[in-house]
Picture 1 (cartoon, helix red, strand yellow):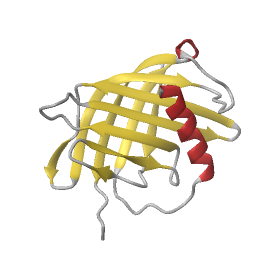
Picture 2 (tube, rainbow, N blue to C red):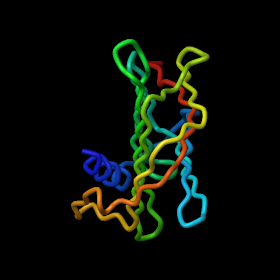
Picture 3 (cartoon, rainbow, N blue to C red):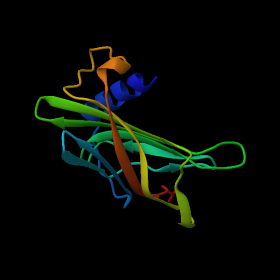
Picture 4 (tube, rainbow, N blue to C red):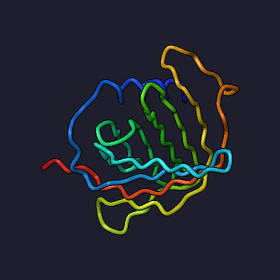
Length: 154
């Protein structure tokens, strides 16, 4: 499933275009071979429900899909951010996962996630035509922070 999401994000990031006015942001950080890497995302959409905050980013920076489960009585929180970052002809796909963590809200419609640790799965030179399995992924420690402003119907 994770590899299908990575493939979908890569394809969407190459095909979609538009403008984002939402002030939301997500920062994904990981270290590889002694060098720190940060991927900054500006979501185009922030869809909020009682259980989840999710959306896509395809126009301002790397293409991504993200999902932040909200902790409630029926479930623990889970965070998933999938990024496809194009640099010339090379595409790097990054998947971030964290369990038992979730953004909280201080203002209605705004969710903030302080620096949260999790696992980064990395595919360098990603090719949407290749079927990957877990042994193809580089597993690293990483963090994510986010401020997500829910889209309104206005």
